Length: 271
Image (cartoon, one colour):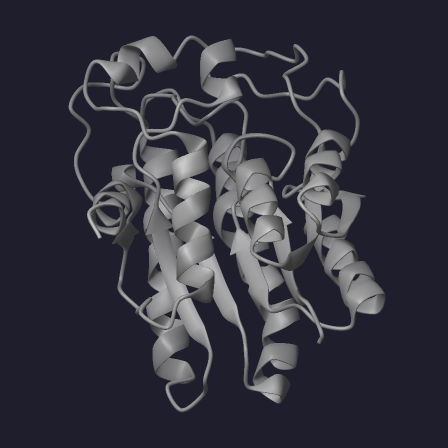
């Protein structure tokens, strides 16, 4: 039997890595991308000022865990600010596996601009944020969608954010968030609904998932986790991964504008 294949961006750590592992346990092979191919690499991820300190996790460490869970893993370095690298990774994955059953647009822009106040943000910063959070995910969808339509099978999941749906409880840096990040995620939210309308007669599924507050290595490195934790309970990345795997596999999973992981996880746990 042909194994299902998932293509996951931002899979070197956090939700992306945990989802790759969870899907491997569910019988998937994975194609995973991120900037960090090997442990110890340094990349820009500062929210207020430049920060290139090495963070835990890499594609290679995720791949090791995927293989230990029984899946195959294809690792490819890519950068969502360079969409050609993501498209090249998709082409390589299709050449290696022959098909993609699940696209998880998980990676998001990491760098200056995410937490800037409106009077402080630059056009370059907001352009980078939209490139990483909107334009590159769109390019990825355009690359995998034709094959899914030909096979009449496939799921596309976009990782969005609660910050796109509500006003911040405080200014950025004081427990809230910035305009550029939240507005880019609001734009991304619109994609799944439009895809559902455009392909309503297909067997494909298009979903947005909102993970809730998840403490990430980037947040820890930038001192954001403590400030935001005052406003909401944290959701473990592993819980998010388990729910995404359920959404990918369950016939009960449905298309909704935004599926909120914390609430859905509680419903599944109560069964």
